[in-house]
Length: 501
Ligand code: FAD
Image: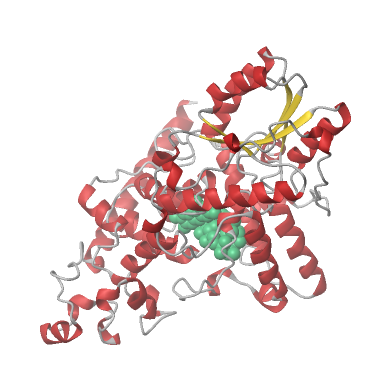
């Protein structure tokens, strides 16, 4: 057992060394007080049940990268197994912890856990330092500025943050002095677990298109930031949901795991903006980062943000239940090739374009299947590399016209939408290979192909590829009526509530 006091930095959704104030605080504290420094990560024993396999691989890669970057600084990552609430009391004693640093997270599971850890720390006389560094703004102070209520529009949010200055430099982490390292620095006991050690057969996973880690994140950021003209003319609605190579940055998995600091990304964009004329929010790249901030703030300020019931910003809609349809949607078997291609890309690669998310989310909810956005959000949580509590729930509410967006009568067509950017259906041919040989005329609507063509293309509808679950042309009109009725009921309830106040 160590006799020297320790400072612990707890890495969570901040798997990076650049722009990591909380880690820097830990290092300074250890250095100044001549304590030991232990950067830790906790792997919950339930992790394989909580995180989908692709995201788990991304996480493990990110931890390996963090460990190797820490080693370059003369330190390492100490990975511990177990639940935070059970691990910490023992750690506090065994390592004689005096300081615990961490970043502020808003996911309610982490918030609840932090409350318990704070109490445990208080009992053991451990001083906790928490830093806002996952977002550009301190979302709680913005809420305060708006008298505690959530600004429900992006424009209002922008006006609230318009005069907040963002410091124009980021922390560079310095080396860890030898005297801050504990004697068991080289112990294998704390190694990053491999996927195999977690019970996942690595070879069974698909191709790794987006490897995790800070090193990859910075490399990816630099590649995109070098394309100044592209950055300056970026307009989100003009990017393609079904290009074979992504038409946006795919920095989201790195931001959500904290491998990339949003501030670092923001400052890079700002420096380019200063050089030449630039597209503007909400469609510019800076505008995309502001959407992230907007949803973080909405998530932090709204009770039950990831649920319909008990969520004050969410319209109550009497969604139906259909497990078969939900499963078919999740597995890419709806019979609509564009929808199926998107869901299969998501399952295989863990990332899909924003407008592709629009398509499948609208299809599942108000467009076609009339299934709750909460069900879709759970499937996304399982499959997305960039799963992020606030962004996922917020965007699902938007797409299902439950909050933030109210034009429920604007429904995406699973046939026409994809054709706008991919007439030949190359994207469908890649992700739904059973339709690969279909003539372009039928690639979005294979059920319309005559039997002879189906035979020649080697894919019989109803045998090799499913019939459509629903007839979009008919069902979306019925669903619009249901949405209109739900909106009416909600409006009446709200006005009754106002009268009773
Ligand atoms: P870029 O266009 O390159 O944008 C740069 C960054 O801006 C992104 O990495 C992201 O951090 C942020 N951003 C972009 N669009 C949005 C947006 N609409 N809302 C909030 N932030 C945004 N994004 C997640 O990171 N995690 C999620 O769990 C998530 N779930 C979603 C669920 C649905 C139903 C929908 C419609 C969108 C969801 N998004 C989510 C938002 C968005 O689709 C992704 O952030 C974006 O597609 C990521 O790709 P990119 O990094 O290439 O984005």
